[in-house]
Image (tube, rainbow, N blue to C red; front, side, top):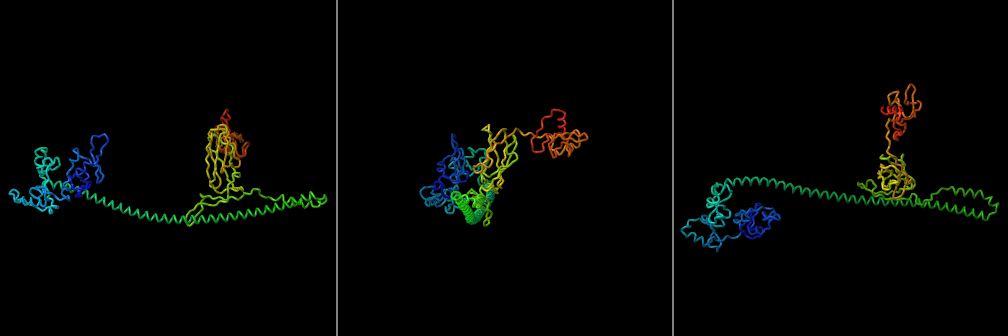
Length: 528
């Protein structure tokens, strides 16, 4: 609602104008607002309301054509001046002529014969009386009051307007049409109030939801703090457990090392004693003395030489921390990080596969890498840094991109699909070092020749007993059967390919194109 002062200049109203957003501003303040318009256009047709920041359109006539806000004027906080003398403060209003009068002019108003019968009312009593408001005069005809309403133009007019610009327009007195237009406005007001109620309900729900979110966020924050503190406690306990485990492992390995050292020192002492005694015997002893003690000395030296010992001082001393290794539960939390006392030894890692050194063009081939520790035992975990390169020996720009699959148990499956035939150099690294057997040469043959026959036990079974069916194994059966049969002459004794006689199902076909009648009979078997 309009207050007693302009929201921009904070001064009493001066010709207030009502914007389409229903906020009022003084006309001078409106004219001082920066216009909103597109660059290059002649004039801006909109302004930004300083109250609600809404962009509102101006009428073609500019600010002066905006609807005056008489309600703001009637609620203005400044004292009204006398309309007759313009010097004193108005204390009463004439209900007949609508003029605000000071005390002196009121007395003069009553003394004059023409206005003596006019009714006067105290201005303090007119604040809430709509019938006692000052009359509104026509902007186009300042001496004429607005008493009529033009239905076609939907605006109040005066008598002069009816005979001028609004000639032949339907019109009526304002007190006759106010009920109809007021009722329509009340219906709109009612609809808007209902929407306001709905919006207020939604806003209330939003506030409730905001409170619920705030409460839930605080509860979750508490849960996070409890979880984090518990997790920190679990991590600290896991740390202490790992450190104790490391200390125990260190003591164990040190004891083993000390024992091994003591054993080797004793062996060295025994050998030194035997060597010194033998050297002294050979240099200082007589022939007879040597022959007498030879048996004892030889037996001792032979026994010392037969003692087995390891010359690798670092064998079995590996201690490794794996931060990504699952370490089970600690205080109800899953923790990671484990101490591993087995370290992979690239020189003891082995390669396995049927076709390790051979492959076929455009055929997926693979082999297995087994990682072992320093004593040759298989590592039972994955995560090692395995690197594989396969490069053509004649074409340096030709390389095969292999795929390394970690099985998680110390084995790795390496697969590749060569596109070019020829010799390749294959290098397999673990922790940057060659494994056992690396590098090696790979022979990639031309495209794998598919079998055109059937993999069968014998011709008799695969052909359903047809006599003309033959097999490339060369076997025959009595009774006119030209193909092989179980236990008969030429049968290889195991399942085989009918097209070439190969006994390995995954082998390459060795048969050639048919050149004679016998080969055409062979194709008959292939077709069967």
